[in-house]
Length: 185
Image (cartoon, rainbow, N blue to C red; front, side, top):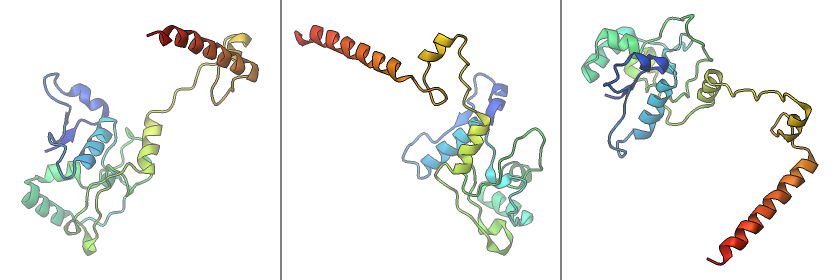
C-alpha cells in the first residue's frame, strides 16, 4: 500500500518510520500517478473526491461492500480515504477539482446511476492554485536606501539601462580575462 503523511502530520510520525511509502519499482503501472499523488499529500493536499462540495452521487453501502471485497478496507478506512469529508474550519478549500491528481478513480459501483471517474495522472490547474495558496511566493524586501533600489532587479523594479549595460561590460571583461588564462591549457 502506498501512502504519505499529510503535510505537517509527518512531524507526528516516529523518526524511525517513513512518512511516505512509494512503489519501489519505477515500472509499476501507475508509478507516475502514485508519486504525484503522494507528494501532493506530503505538501498538505487532501483527496479531491472527498471535497465537501464535490456533489458526487455516492452509494455508501455499495462503496463499503466493494472496498472490503476488493481491498480489504474497513468502513473506517473507506470513510477516511474515499467518502466525502465534512467541512472543517481547520482547512482552506479551493473549489472542487475533478481533474486533480489528488482524485481517486471512482468505480461506478461506488455511485448511484453507475457514475464513475478515472484518476488524473497530471497536475491540474486547481492543484497548482492550491499549492500557490499554501506556499505563496515571498515578497522581496523593499530597498532600505535609494542606491540599493538601483541595484535591485525583478518584475516589480526593472534594472535601469545604464546599470544593465555596466553589468554586461563587467561580465564581458571577466570572460575575456578568464578565457585568456584558459587558452594556454
